[in-house]
Image (tube, rainbow, N blue to C red; front, side):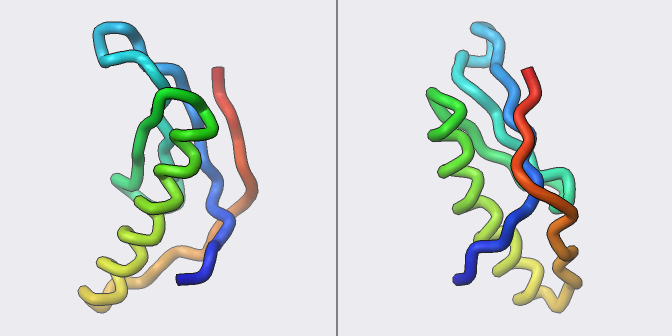
Length: 74
């Protein structure tokens, strides 16, 4: 599957939430992942993006075009 450049927001998770980092994709509702480091969260969310797009296509739903590049929020 081709790699598209969707905006990704990376935020730290609290200790109560298990720590690490969450990565969300605003252009793809519900598309998110996490990881121990910001880099791991970004790598993991790429798999989630691929899965999200595949599921949308299988269901005949439109796939939004990427609106921008990578973002990190602190």
